[in-house]
Length: 103
Image (cartoon, rainbow, N blue to C red; front, side, top):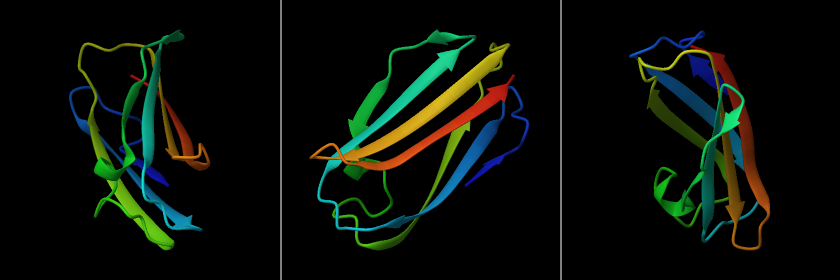
């Protein structure tokens, strides 16, 4: 996992790169993006996992590399925590990562 630039810069994109070893084929699932801004939880965004991974589904067994960019809103000030959770259709955790930053 890498998150650059570190620290995040307001008004610029931050890039999260992940590499994971997927142990079994995944046909469908959910990707949940949760944010906590200055200790206040915001409404999570739940998306179709197949639309969030390179190549869509099925997600094959083996190494999966992903890269996502997020614009850091210039109006933000304080602490921002981003949590990403991927689950398959039987609720098995495939990925859980949290990135905390000061802006």
